[in-house]
Amino acid sequence: NSYSDTNLVKNQSLNEWTTHLGMDFIVAERSDVVASYNGTIESVEYDSLTGTVVTIDHGDGLKSSYGSLASEVAVTVGQAVKTGEKIGSASASAGNESGLGSHVHFEVYLNDETVNPMNYLGEK
Image: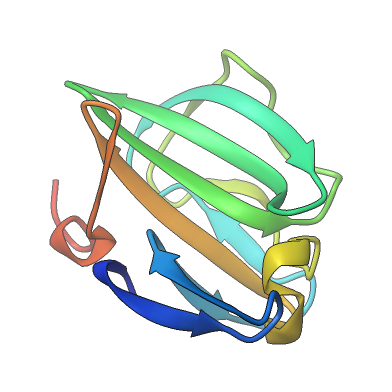
Protein backbone atom coordinates (compact mmCIF):
# COMPACT_ATOMS: atom_id res chain seq x y z
CA ASN A 1 0.00 0.00 0.00
CA SER A 2 1.22 3.47 -0.78
CA TYR A 3 1.08 6.70 1.24
CA SER A 4 -2.21 8.60 1.33
CA ASP A 5 -2.84 11.44 3.75
CA THR A 6 -5.89 12.91 2.02
CA ASN A 7 -7.66 10.12 0.12
CA LEU A 8 -9.23 7.32 2.09
CA VAL A 9 -8.16 3.79 1.20
CA LYS A 10 -9.83 0.53 2.18
CA ASN A 11 -8.02 -1.32 4.98
CA GLN A 12 -9.00 -4.92 4.22
CA SER A 13 -7.77 -6.19 7.61
CA LEU A 14 -9.92 -3.76 9.63
CA ASN A 15 -12.70 -3.54 7.01
CA GLU A 16 -12.73 0.26 7.17
CA TRP A 17 -11.77 3.30 5.11
CA THR A 18 -8.83 5.30 6.44
CA THR A 19 -5.78 7.30 5.43
CA HIS A 20 -2.52 5.36 5.06
CA LEU A 21 0.33 7.41 6.47
CA GLY A 22 3.15 5.15 5.37
CA MET A 23 4.20 2.64 2.75
CA ASP A 24 3.93 -1.14 2.98
CA PHE A 25 6.70 -3.27 1.54
CA ILE A 26 5.59 -6.90 1.16
CA VAL A 27 8.60 -9.13 1.79
CA ALA A 28 9.34 -12.68 2.87
CA GLU A 29 8.98 -13.49 6.56
CA ARG A 30 12.21 -12.74 8.47
CA SER A 31 13.68 -10.61 5.64
CA ASP A 32 16.22 -8.11 6.98
CA VAL A 33 14.92 -4.60 7.60
CA VAL A 34 17.60 -1.91 7.47
CA ALA A 35 17.91 1.74 8.50
CA SER A 36 17.08 4.15 5.70
CA TYR A 37 19.53 6.80 6.98
CA ASN A 38 22.10 7.26 9.74
CA GLY A 39 20.54 8.02 13.10
CA THR A 40 19.87 7.02 16.69
CA ILE A 41 17.26 4.49 17.81
CA GLU A 42 14.59 6.56 19.53
CA SER A 43 12.21 3.77 20.50
CA VAL A 44 11.37 0.09 20.20
CA GLU A 45 7.69 -0.52 20.96
CA TYR A 46 5.00 -3.13 20.51
CA ASP A 47 1.23 -3.04 20.36
CA SER A 48 -1.25 -5.39 18.78
CA LEU A 49 -2.26 -2.98 16.00
CA THR A 50 1.14 -1.88 14.70
CA GLY A 51 3.22 -4.84 15.87
CA THR A 52 6.84 -4.22 16.79
CA VAL A 53 7.91 -0.73 15.70
CA VAL A 54 11.44 0.71 15.64
CA THR A 55 11.75 4.51 15.32
CA ILE A 56 15.00 6.19 14.28
CA ASP A 57 15.79 9.87 14.87
CA HIS A 58 17.91 11.11 11.95
CA GLY A 59 18.34 14.68 13.24
CA ASP A 60 17.04 17.98 11.87
CA GLY A 61 13.46 16.94 12.70
CA LEU A 62 13.55 13.84 10.45
CA LYS A 63 12.49 10.44 11.84
CA SER A 64 11.54 7.11 10.30
CA SER A 65 9.61 4.20 11.74
CA TYR A 66 9.48 0.55 10.71
CA GLY A 67 6.40 -1.38 11.80
CA SER A 68 5.26 -5.00 11.68
CA LEU A 69 8.73 -6.22 12.67
CA ALA A 70 9.45 -9.51 14.42
CA SER A 71 9.67 -9.13 18.20
CA GLU A 72 13.41 -9.84 18.30
CA VAL A 73 14.97 -6.62 16.99
CA ALA A 74 18.69 -6.09 16.33
CA VAL A 75 18.92 -2.67 18.03
CA THR A 76 18.42 -0.97 21.38
CA VAL A 77 17.17 2.49 22.34
CA GLY A 78 19.99 5.04 22.14
CA GLN A 79 22.07 2.96 19.72
CA ALA A 80 23.61 4.75 16.72
CA VAL A 81 22.86 3.09 13.35
CA LYS A 82 24.19 3.63 9.86
CA THR A 83 22.33 3.59 6.54
CA GLY A 84 21.78 -0.04 5.53
CA GLU A 85 22.40 -1.47 9.01
CA LYS A 86 19.99 -4.21 10.07
CA ILE A 87 17.48 -3.09 12.67
CA GLY A 88 15.13 -6.09 12.63
CA SER A 89 13.22 -8.61 10.54
CA ALA A 90 9.93 -8.38 8.67
CA SER A 91 6.91 -10.21 10.02
CA ALA A 92 3.14 -10.10 10.14
CA SER A 93 3.02 -8.66 13.69
CA ALA A 94 0.83 -5.64 12.75
CA GLY A 95 -2.76 -6.63 13.53
CA ASN A 96 -4.15 -3.61 11.68
CA GLU A 97 -2.57 -4.92 8.45
CA SER A 98 -2.70 -8.65 9.10
CA GLY A 99 -4.19 -9.33 5.67
CA LEU A 100 -0.92 -8.23 4.07
CA GLY A 101 1.09 -11.05 5.62
CA SER A 102 4.79 -10.46 6.18
CA HIS A 103 5.66 -6.83 5.42
CA VAL A 104 7.25 -3.65 6.71
CA HIS A 105 5.12 -0.58 7.35
CA PHE A 106 7.47 2.38 6.75
CA GLU A 107 6.65 5.91 7.89
CA VAL A 108 8.62 9.17 7.74
CA TYR A 109 8.11 12.18 10.00
CA LEU A 110 9.36 15.71 9.59
CA ASN A 111 8.96 17.86 12.69
CA ASP A 112 6.58 15.22 14.11
CA GLU A 113 4.23 15.34 11.09
CA THR A 114 3.92 12.37 8.75
CA VAL A 115 5.20 13.01 5.24
CA ASN A 116 5.27 10.95 2.07
CA PRO A 117 8.18 8.47 2.40
CA MET A 118 8.73 8.61 -1.37
CA ASN A 119 10.04 12.15 -0.89
CA TYR A 120 12.92 10.75 1.18
CA LEU A 121 13.79 7.37 -0.29
CA GLY A 122 17.05 7.55 -2.17
CA GLU A 123 17.97 10.96 -0.77
CA LYS A 124 20.07 12.40 2.07
